[in-house]
Length: 379
Ligand SMILES: *Cc1c(COP(=O)(O)O)cnc(C)c1O
Image (cartoon, rainbow, N blue to C red; front, side, top):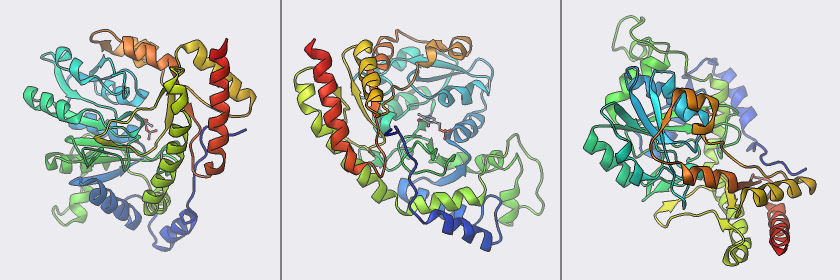
């Protein structure tokens, strides 16, 4: 069976973990964590990067930083992972879902303004598949209405929008290093702080609500409980693993892009014949080949493709069940406007296997997909 995903190791991870032990520091915020922070700050251009256990944890810190009051609203797409919404629900806020664009499957920026009320506090654009949302429009709406923007760049490491790295555009950004993402630590993430106003408090929230960081920097003479927070920092074993990946991040990305290009060229005929729509990348976006997806013409065709591929030992998968149609989404969130694009495209999307080590098989998989789709539409 060709799995949909297989976590990649560079070969340096275990050596780094042994080194972390030699360093005599296995709790969080040791030398490997610092190296990861420096790389993230230099690569993304953030004022401060903070490693977390997950992108979920980074979104939670962001939500705490907003000082939300019960009933405050946060605008986001429904076509996203649970954590985008859950982090804000945990702080008493109401996610307000709006529809996505049919080309990129990103939040439809033209529908944001009509979703804004006097309770709106923030907008959370999700850069689906490492393709940037229309950040110019989103940032200008936010500044007009005094809203904070938090980029969910979980899938967006080393991708950019108009030459600015994803996660480095809004006041706050979040990354994921989950094993299904491009650069991995098993479970892991980062909070990217681009507006320095949030730095000190973010450090406190991440360190159990203590001013431990200020104490170690000699700014206060004892460390104590000063704010709300939790333990959001990963240990050095995770950071050591991640640093090995980070050192090969450019190479990993270009190898993924080359596989992505093979798929994309292989499906141009299908698209020309109207049998499917290919993954779309706007000219001003540099993507990171986080995934390769196709949109079939109907849900039935999409499911037939997935089933037939499974019979041929290739695992292809659909993606999000829109959050507005989930039990918790109905309970904790509301929608603004209709969700027709979200409902429609989520039923027609299929993601193909794409991971380092699959280079030799991509063309075979593409040929198989091509003949299955031709067959589906020949009837
Ligand atoms: C993967 C993902 C997350 C969650 O990341 P974790 O590191 O698993 O918490 C959040 N948002 C989006 C868009 C994701 O793709």
